[in-house]
Length: 193
Image (tube, rainbow, N blue to C red; front, side, top):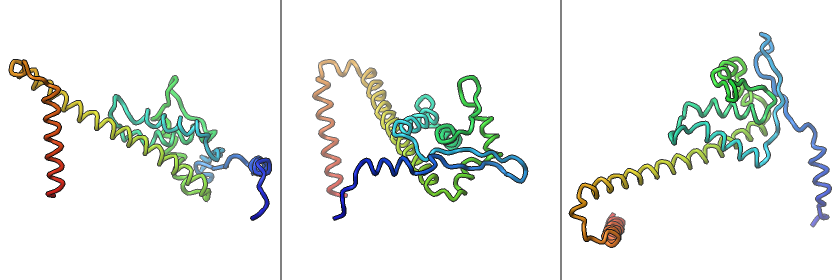
């Protein structure tokens, strides 16, 4: 076994690890559209959480997933949170259409993917993965809620329709009996099938 590694030594190595950012040129130097930006190596855990939350807020509107916003908002948040490249705004919100114009000139994600910086490309893939995980979680939760809500609404309509026939019936007992019967049928179906 080698000698123990001191925390102080590790901190010194990390502290002296060189440049804390990457330099990437967006655009085309030949036609004069090139702009050099600095990209952070990584976000703090708090910033990653904020990134994922921003992505989720950007792609859901009134509980409905809006896939057309995913790629452009992902690119905006990458550039906003990882780079020093300015993001166009209208009042306090992003000017998405203006940013799309900029992206058509600077090709932000394509330039990053074409770079030889594997660490940055992998880190951006990681941010994409964790964003997708949360988006899919929310989509599943919304889908599950809506199915339950539909079932509940149907039961309410039927119970209102047949209210006079339900007088004197212990609904809790009836629901429990129905649930037990459904569970038994499901178990029987699994055995048979």
